[in-house]
Image (tube, rainbow, N blue to C red; front, side, top):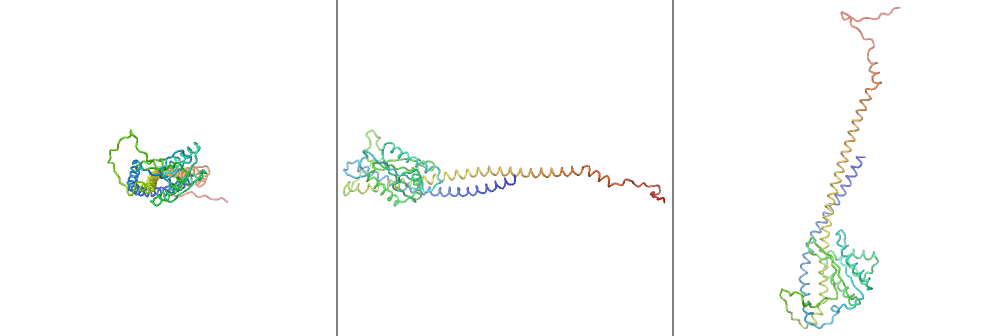
Amino acid sequence: MPGAQERVLRRRIGSIQNTKKITRAMELIAATRVVKAQMAANDARPYSEQITTVIANLAAGGTSVSHPLLREAGDVRKVGVVVLTSDRGLAGAYNSTVIRSAERVIVAAKAEGKDYSLITIGKKAEGYFKFRNYTIDAAFTGISDKPTYEDAREVAAKVTELFNDDVGVIELAYTRFVSMGTQEAVVRRFLPLETAAPAADAPASTGPSAEFEFEPSPASVLESLLPRYVESRLFAALLDAAASEHANRQRAMKAATDNAQELIIKLQRKMNQARQDAITTEIMEIISGAEALSADKGGPEDLLLDHLSTDPFPKLALPGGHTPHQHSHL
């Protein structure tokens, strides 16, 4: 029925309009948070770069320091993977892309006969790997949206503990924030620290080279800086991942809002067509009823009644205005 179809379409349009309001609100919230997350990542980057420069100068200066974080990878029998995802969905392909990148590392390690250790950050990674029966050594949730340095320190302590036990190499899988429109999933070596000197054929740096004096000794300074270096790298990755999450969610909600608007327009056209069909049907019913009534009025029964209603013996007028009278004869 056209009327019933119109009611169904009207209810569906109302439901989609409510969904559109939600996606629009989430888009605006993500747009606000991505700016703050980007500013936090930019503020933390100078510290991470400076501490990296200090450690590189220590390592390049031939400092003889024996630290577990500086050991060579050697014969790796166990690979560690740290995956950074979000706790919430509705962020497009943000979570699935970085999860697939981490899973490829695990599959490659198992294909080479190596064992693995897995640390997940975010409910999405934890749920994915648990569902596929992967062994998770540690899982952290509730820190992906707005990470703090204390969160990075807690995760770094667990990562360092695994590395000091029997893990040869630890890979970090996260989403690097390039710009508001570009984020890329990367897998980078996290431990052991790469402190090799630049190659001989590498281009010379054009920037000023800083010289450092270490007190009381380079060994003690390096012993103190290496844990902070791990924490700062992890904290920078967490901030990059948070900014990437909000940027992906903003784009996903923008696309959802646009799709909802297009669907509303299509359904409104269908509803207008259904309304026109209903009006046309009513007009046709009225016309058909009128034609039926006119046809019934001109039938044989009506003609007979009209004939009987007339006087079969009309009275004739005589001269002088008199009318003839019938006389009865006894």
